Image (tube, helix red, strand yellow):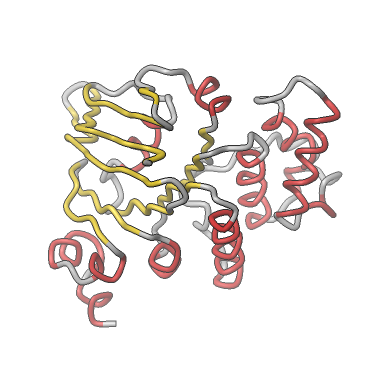
Length: 241
């Protein structure tokens, strides 16, 4: 069964068509990568799936339910969580507080929210920083905090929007290991990422879009050799490496 199905998704902003008749699906327990040039429409796809933008046309189905027009907070309660490309924690609050905010999306019990938050922080190796102000974290730890807030909601489907941007190679490797562990636990993951070695290593399949349209889909090795993808996004240097 597919956890997510997108059929003929189109999103217009006035005269600009950001996403154009996009079809894709993600099987339960799969990692799907979404790549393409800047401005290709990747984050708009995420925003439509997560309920931030209503589609202009087309259909989005999550866990067997049509979700066009469903509000983000209701999708979160149903098991769909996302991170944001620009990380904006509650800077003056503790790391623990920030993650409990995520947990409160699915529970009204403070003790349960705290327990959920601590468990997630332990998994992400942030437990020792739980009393630190979020604004004092390094960029790498802020990225982990963003993931932690999403995980505290207990998602079935996790949307990760460039969670490795700005990280050093060793930090990228640590996040790759975290995402693989999440998949090992049965989570379904939809990833946008520009760090090619990371997205190639993680994804079961890749979808490539340009100007809002899908130009290629398949296993990472096949996509990396596709002539249209090389011209539109990867470049000849990547193809030759």
